[in-house]
Image (cartoon, rainbow, N blue to C red; front, side):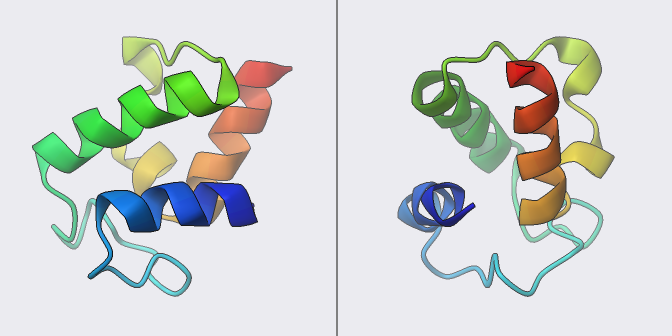
Length: 74
C-alpha cells in the first residue's frame, strides 16, 4: 500500500491520502485527477480498470483503491 500512497502523492501532493475517506464524495479529487490515477494504476500494477470499476466507492480512499487493485490483479 505504500507504493500506492507514493503514486497518489506524486499526482496530488496537497491531499491527505492516508486519512481521507471521501476523495470523490467530498470533491477532493477532480475528474482529471481520477483519469490520471487510473492511468498510473494501469501502468504501475499492470492492470486494466474497466469502466464498470470506475465508481466513487473504488476511489474514495486509498484502502478502496488498494482493494480494487488486488481484485483486478487476482
